[in-house]
Length: 150
Image 1: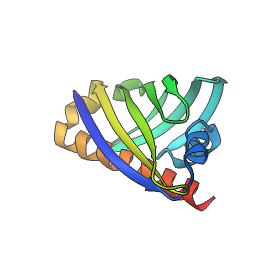
Image 2: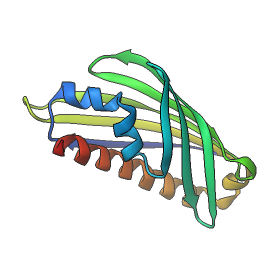
Image 3: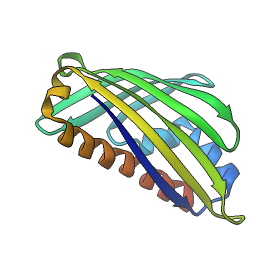
């Protein structure tokens, strides 16, 4: 089951600072909902463990995150794939674009695609879509707060 999520976040920080944070595993780990661990394997590859609850199912996903199409400091594509054992799998990615809005404000736009399979996919598309939108929204707003406050 595939879905698309789009959004925008205004961040009270200069473009370079936001770009640096988007590539910082500590910032990402602190702002990805349910992230238990995130470690760099190379400048563009990370290993992640994320706990996600969708309806009655709570699953721990172990997976890989890859950064592609890097155009510093303006855009990149982040892609991930995780296996949640009996719960199933999740894979997806987001095209992230940064635009300067004055010297101290950056507009972050994202277009994310997600695909789930296995037991989780049986929960129904509305529940999966609302949970996915909520998690994406939580990540980008928490990322914006952390980077804007730092």
